[in-house]
Length: 341
Image 1: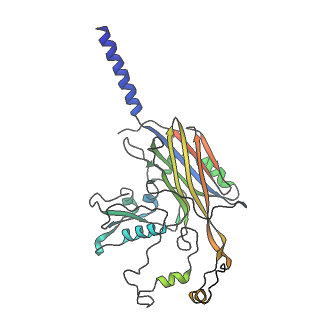
Image 2: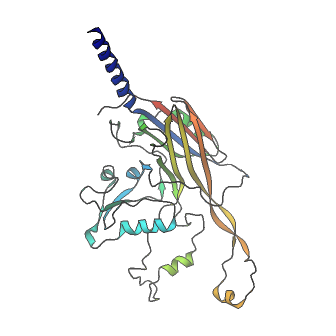
Image 3: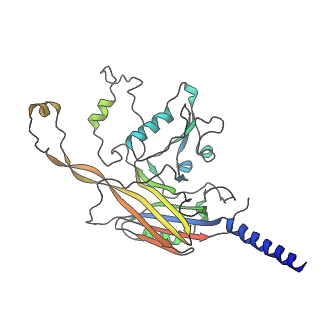
């Protein structure tokens, strides 16, 4: 009898430990990113660092963007990736349809509830129209709290704790706020973690391509012409697509739990500058010469991409600062009780 009782108690203890092991660990994350006006002489990469956003969770778009749902024939929702062709395809699939009722616009309030494919139509795709400049303070309209079994949830600005830090850094000469937001999320291991998409500041897509090249106005005017060569008469196939945003700050922040907390940043900060670029030669001159002479180069306006790419082990509840010549990030990952179902 006593042996059976001991076995039962041991079983209950083992089940209890197993249940605790399966319990999700939840944390509250607060991030503040600012731009620093500096005279750095560092040489930055020629192209933006790769940031994979196809799996990233976007908490910002439903707050700052206007949701547009397209009832197209696409079998999967369109995701913004850093490739010009893919972005064009994404823009096309979310703005075209078979009839005038194929696209539905939502207000910002409705956009909070719709961040993926429509439940009424599995082929529906949600995209967003953005303002030219995003405010640095991002938060939900009212206080929010996570629920068990759900994903990350954006909190209201009043639920943050960085007010004094932001005031102190903002007073320093040359600093300018880019992004401040707070959210709650469950922490997974590295293999199961999902990054958070971060973007802020100005949209440069009207003046620059994603890779930094300046958009030439003559080329844009040529694209506005129809296939029949008549200016202003655009056919359906020649209608220009809305370019995907080229944000001043853009990338991902991934946080995962592996005995310790780890943060991985893959961010690009864009600044206007100049770059030595080859002069485009016309077709006649190209045919007139058979020599392989190198094309002439001139200083051309260029959108520089400055990377913030780090992997750091951190402790919960401590305030950590990621330093950079051109920007700074303040982050705190706070322990929180497991939310209710």
